[in-house]
Image (cartoon, rainbow, N blue to C red; front, top):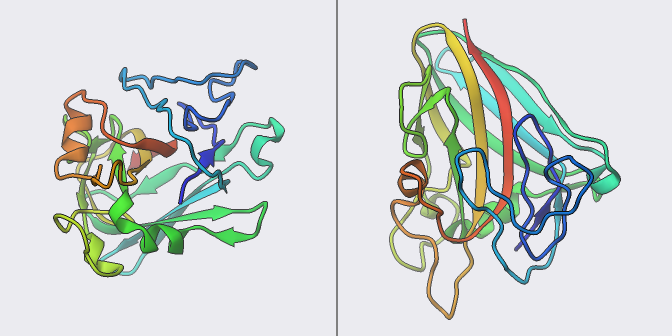
Length: 224
């Protein structure tokens, strides 16, 4: 499964290069796009296109407290920019983070399709609020993957790699910053898998990882 994503948030949202898109918000169409870290997410892939209009993050603490934040662009390509809820978490707390994707225009839950094609997808959690595989530095939260491909079906090809629909987020001291969520789509090329170990780490070190970007949205996160 492949997507064209028209999500626009405070930083950026990316569509594959095979699709023209106004991801910069300047009224112009752009085929190739770099993010604010200099990573090029415009890849020339010949995709079917499925719209994702909503990204929902659900943080559940070990005590059972829940924080939900949503990025929503309900009109899709109609031209209005999407909006993101702020994320406010408690300090010194461990949360399970579950990510869900939805297409409001077709009333379709896209998350089961990510599960079904887990070997072709991986989320990268990054931003200046985050320390983890995809984001080097000293953020106010640490990220670790809490799932692998075999959690959603048979691991048929290669290593049993992270997906990122389920994650562990641990907060430290009070502070804030950007919490970014990217979904990479990594279909096989010439019968060879694109998804490989170290995808998020390569991104954190300035590399341009394989595949194409289906979702890349930014939330403002505060620990207080």
